[in-house]
Length: 285
Image (cartoon, rainbow, N blue to C red; front, side, top):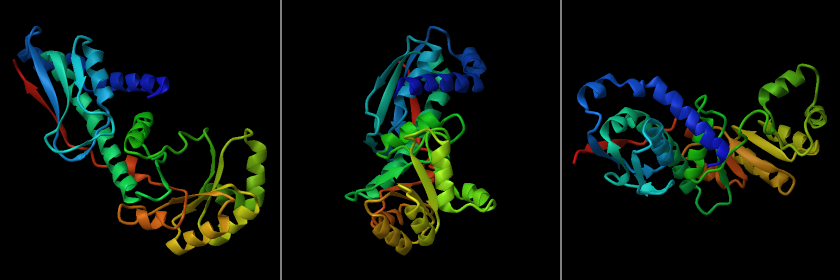
């Protein structure tokens, strides 16, 4: 993770610990002496792809730097039920205080990585990339994008300032003013920093042809049929990169990839991926 991601991670951990009242855990204060030591094992309860153990380690360290965190599997590793992922050792109170925050991050990010890997595996052998989208939980985007990478996917633009993506609502606003796709592309070229990636969403072969004729070099094919995508691929080959989006599932993604598109973006791997079941089992010496 980059320095920027690490800084974001630490801010998120502090917010999560404060939200959980981890520094004022009434139950643990009442029942666990300050000098009692213990161990906690992170165990997978379901098959999946691991992601987020460094964030768990940082959650414990935020409360007590003396807690020792041992990672037993690498980020992006495939695990089975019962596999031990990591161990936390030290004073029991901070381990219990940070337990839920650490698990929440690991479960959420491992779920995203697992969902991503399922799609990556479904298109194995085909020259296509699986991309995330901006459909992320507010505040968690940097970590959720990291989870997509752990699952074997790739990242789309980070935010609205990263790249130009002319969507259907932009086109509707432009058409209300009488602008054609060619005029829209020309306006964006003149109003954007030089060298910035520019992509335009199209919903039909006619719109795709119009965009290509206007010099578009990247098309987002939104909710097109397989036959429509194949037609656009044949016309655009060598002229533009093609991204498919819409109605992508584990069952449909290989057929979409076989049309010849360059990448497939999937929103649900971040907004709806089920969490991976992981538990923290405490062992007292």
